[in-house]
Amino acid sequence: MFLVSFTAILYGAVAARAHYPYSPGINHVSPAQWSALNASVSGKLHGGIPLARPCFTLANTAGSADPAKCAAIREGYSNSRFLVEQFGAYMNVQWGSCQKTTQTCVLKGFNITDPSPSNPPNVCQQGSVSPYYIDVRDASDVQKALAFSKRTGVPLVVKNTGHDYEGRSSAPGSLALWTHNLQSLSYNVSFVPAGCPASRAKPGVTMGAGSIADNVVAFAEANNVTVVAGAERSVGASGGWLMGGGHGALANTLGLGVDRVLEFKIVTPTGQFLTANECQNSDLFWALRGGGGGTFGVVMESTSLASPKMTLQVAFAHFSRNNTNATRGFYKVVAENSVRWAEQGFGGYIESFQALYVTPKLNSTEAAATMQPLFDYVKALAPNDPGVQILNLEVPSYGTFYQTFIANSGAPVGENAVVASRLIPAANFASAENRTALVDALMQTLAHVTFGLTLIATTPYNVPDDGSTSVTQAWRTAVWHAIAEGGWDGAVPLDEEKSAYSGISAAADFLRAITPDGAYQNEADVNEPNHEVSFWGSNYPRLLQIKKKYDPENVLSCWHCVGYNPRSPRFSCYI
Ligand SMILES: Cc1cc2nc3c(=O)[nH]c(=O)nc-3n(C[C@H](O)[C@H](O)[C@H](O)COP(=O)(O)OP(=O)(O)OC[C@H]3O[C@@H](n4cnc5c(N)ncnc54)[C@H](O)[C@@H]3O)c2cc1C
Ligand SMILES: *[C@@H]1O[C@H](CO)[C@@H](O)[C@H](O)[C@H]1NC(C)=O
Ligand SMILES: *[C@@H]1O[C@H](CO)[C@@H](O)[C@H](O)[C@H]1NC(C)=O
Ligand SMILES: *[C@@H]1O[C@H](CO)[C@@H](O)[C@H](O)[C@H]1NC(C)=O
Ligand SMILES: *[C@@H]1O[C@H](CO)[C@@H](O)[C@H](O)[C@H]1NC(C)=O
Ligand SMILES: *[C@@H]1O[C@H](CO)[C@@H](O)[C@H](O)[C@H]1NC(C)=O
Ligand SMILES: *[C@@H]1O[C@H](CO)[C@@H](O)[C@H](O)[C@H]1NC(C)=O
Ligand SMILES: *[C@@H]1O[C@H](CO)[C@@H](O)[C@H](O)[C@H]1NC(C)=O
Ligand SMILES: *[C@@H]1O[C@H](CO)[C@@H](O)[C@H](O)[C@H]1NC(C)=O
Image (cartoon, rainbow, N blue to C red; front, side, top):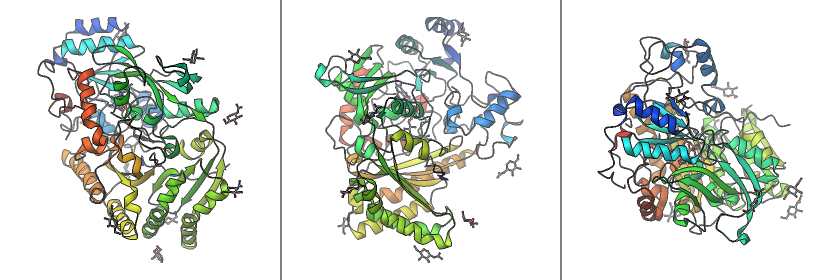
């Protein structure tokens, strides 16, 4: 067994139509109206309470102080598998707060035993946690909520796992649809998208909208097949991760999540329960394959291609995190070899002190040979660095790789993380001058981030754009999706929140200066400049048309989503 001290992988407008009644809003809904809604969804309406409420004696939310529950919350505050089970929890905790008013109900994820955040005079505030949510179990629950929202003007949000980096799964004064309990998983060796000819049959895994990476990878392994899923245990597999693109370690050869999806079942904003695939509602299908979550409807389940189980070659090289002098040389070696590695099927995660790569395309001899420059560089650091580790091995399946190298890497959740993404095309690796400029920009970015910089080599490099997805075409020529990460812990003054956002934008500017506009919408800068082009390239105009067709009253809306209206009160907590 390999005991690798693998440190955390990063993690380290449709103008609002005047007739859509945003006001009077939630304060004008009578108890009788809530009761009627609750009855219409068979009692599945609940009060939304901020996660840390039981730790506070003072609060202006529902709930009460409860020392036993508080102890469990402290224990689970940085454990995504715990957080995903709690409606009132957000992985990046600022999205449960109202940042603009600093109304919050948080603990310190980096110093969880510190009692000060929840001690008087601090008051637990509702923030952006929806005061009401429906524990969605079927399409009718969603239809009832849509009708209620249209009638009352209460904004709707869709919350799945709460991993979002842009606050798209929360909003102040909203009614949330919590998809977490849609956990069904099934495998069909010859899945035929409804309405398609039988000749279209392919192996498919059908996943309820609440399915998470951990469970989907284990299910695929048990069925002797391979799926693409996110690197963090509890990130969604059938919700926002998927509709926004969805990268995973094997995306280089197998494609992004959106490349693999065969069918969605979705309740559209006008309340229709539709099947979208290549043979029916194909415009909606295309939009859902990259247009983003929370925009075109509420997905109930999706079916994605299952590939055969495959043997994988893994390469891992690590040196001490504090050996900053070594990082420039490391980036140089990685930059010199990355296009070849991408051509050879390698996907992976590169931090300033380590790289983890995996490919299904090579045998062990070939993998060792092509990774030699990386191993040689890190080996040469060993005399002065006791932290050096090198590993080169074959694993029998993605499930094994995932369990050994990814699942336990411990995701940094429970703090206020802010990120920025840039897709780095092959052109930035072409000449020695290009690579020098790239390494310089990486070093500058690194010097300006407070949490880290991860170069995510999980782009669909070997999966050409065939027009079937709506993510930006920039994904296909990208060698890396670089993520800069910063943030803060606990509750801080407004100025500090603002400087975390401006700081991460400034850090990403070094990479923006040398690359065309292209970013991964699910791990992007909240203030991404030119976001329509960055996220969707030339696909944006068609996405906007499809949005208007399926959501003519703009009932679903989220930050920087297709057709969003930045002036909507649902965005009043953004800074
Ligand atoms: C620790 C961590 C690790 C990550 N690792 C990866 C990774 O390896 N690869 C990767 O690609 N991304 C990764 N991400 C980013 C991830 O893709 C985004 O956070 C994404 O928004 C998660 O989608 P979700 O459904 O799980 O989360 P949520 O925050 O619940 O939802 C995100 C968005 O999707 C919408 N949505 C969710 N479900 C539905 C539905 N059923 N119907 C309609 N809209 C829906 C929500 O309204 C919201 O707009 C990571 C994020 C974190 C915090
Ligand atoms: C909805 O009804 C159920 C069952 O009657 C009840 O337990 C729940 O508290 C109600 N929700 C709200 C928000 O009142
Ligand atoms: C953590 O909180 C405790 C109070 O419980 C405090 O004494 C300590 O200095 C804090 N540690 C850090 C690293 O902030
Ligand atoms: C698999 O899909 C086919 C085609 O849609 C269908 O006829 C069959 O019943 C499905 N099998 C299972 C086990 O669901
Ligand atoms: C699992 O799948 C692989 C690759 O398709 C195949 O070679 C193997 O026989 C399968 N094993 C079982 C137990 O079905
Ligand atoms: C750097 O890391 C090494 C190994 O992890 C450790 O021995 C050393 O003390 C660290 N140095 C500093 C300054 O933190
Ligand atoms: C810094 O790293 C380079 C290799 O990139 C090495 O040659 C040099 O000796 C290192 N300097 C120190 C002070 O460790
Ligand atoms: C790996 O592939 C090469 C061809 O590229 C072949 O010569 C070699 O024998 C293979 N090695 C193994 C161990 O299969
Ligand atoms: C790459 O470098 C060449 C010169 O070697 C230059 O002409 C070109 O503009 C550079 N491309 C990028 C993307 O920086």
